[in-house]
Length: 342
Image (tube, rainbow, N blue to C red; front, side, top):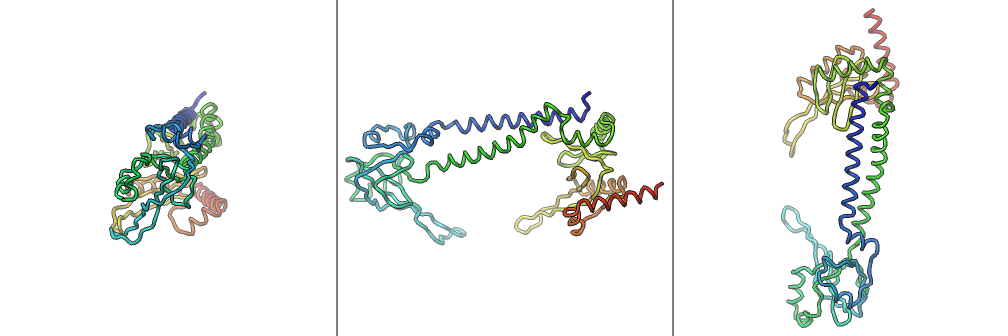
């Protein structure tokens, strides 16, 4: 019989599977949307001579634009591109970031932009010649007579495949997380009883009875906080689009209030308040108004008087580095409290 907890686990797992599936589809569509680049990335650079360059009508649509062009001579046009560095709108320095050369290909001239060593063999992407560069070529007396011999596009020898390699790297990272996140989500959707939360709940006793109590605390909580958390009489329940979690209040080990101050240019802009309830199996970080956070902290202390309440660097260090000793100390406090109560 499916309990409420099993249904919630299955629903969250399904949403995760759907989200990862849609992400995969979008990623594939994005990667294959520019078939022209993919073709040039895989097959280029293409050896292009004068005949092939002459046949290019629109360089933005030509099928082969990752090119390797060999010329007989190379001429310095004198045109340079600079990167200007400023501070508060005032230029502090500038550096040359590119130079434009004319490569003789037959009786035509191909402008080559390079930031590296000049060579009679140029390799890179063919792109439209910027109007600013065309104007500077016309303004130069020695180049004016050669205007008709210039191609209306130029070759930029910046790394053509860099963008592709970045996309491949992102795709590998995506596939890593796809396998790490989507596969377990699919498995938990198919067999929700294998989910770690279900195993944790099973250790608390009757799964059906626990599920009924958890659903009641979720539907009628004492407090509702940020990040999807609800505080009930016995349980802490978190329900979000892609996450569902349940903790027992009686498993509380440490509770404290966290205040975060915010500022812009050292001018205070406000504070945010959180109550952290660290239990066996996980922690609930509940954001809310200061009054609500204080009330939750008092409620938790009343319900679990043996838990450690309050924050000091020493407590945080002990909890982080010696968790088993911390838990043992809390269990001793619990035994003492139950003995006194008895």
